[in-house]
Image 1 (tube, rainbow, N blue to C red):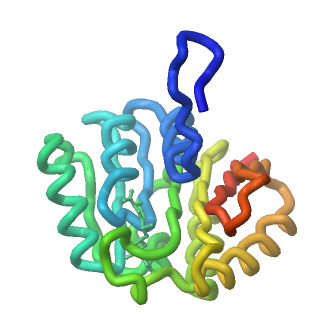
Image 2: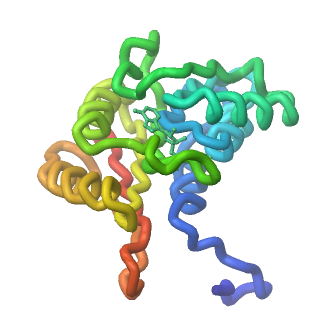
Image 3: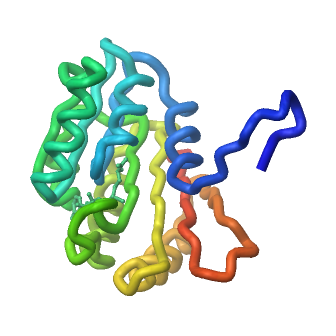
Length: 192
Ligand SMILES: C[S@@+](CC[C@H](N)C(=O)[O-])C[C@H]1O[C@@H](n2cnc3c(N)ncnc32)[C@H](O)[C@@H]1O
C-alpha cells in the first residue's frame, strides 16, 4: 500500500504499527517496558525513542532472545539504557521501581526459534493485568496477538474477552478486516 502523498510506502504490518504507535506516544527520558523482547526489534525502537536519559526494561523467558536483543543493542550502543531480564513477564511488576509510560506485549514465539516456547493465555492474561496496574497516568499498553497458531488462538479468545470488558481505559484496536487467514492484530489500552 502507498500513501497518497509523495508515493511513500505505508507499513501496515501489525507489529510495526504497534511499535510506531507506542514510540509516538513516548518521549525522551521516559521509562518503557518490552515484555517480550524476542529478537530485539521493539526494544531497539524503544531505546532509540527514550534516548540516553530514558530507560527500557526488556524481558523474555528465553536466553536466545535475551542474547539476540543484547547483540542488537550493543550494535547500536543502546545497552546502557536497557535492563535485560530473562524471566517470565508475569513478574514484570516486581521489577519496576517507577511507573512506565508504555508497555509492549508482542505475543507468540521467537521468529526463527522454537515455536513450542510461546506465550500462554493464562500467564499472558495475568501478566497483562499486572502490567496495566503499573502504567503511569496516560500510559499506553500494546498487545500484538497472533491467532494463526493454536496457542495464539486461545490467547486471542481470552484477551479479547477481557479487553472488551475493561472499564476506565481508552481502548483501540488495529486489525486487517479482510484477511482470509487469521491475521495478527493489536490492542492498545490507554490509562485514562
Ligand atoms: C513474537 S516474539 C517477540 C518479538 C520481539 N518483540 C521483537 O521485536 O523481536 C515473542 C517472544 O515472547 C517470548 N515469551 C514467551 N513466553 C514468555 C513469557 N512468559 N515471558 C516473557 N517472554 C515470553 C518468546 O520467548 C518470544 O521471544
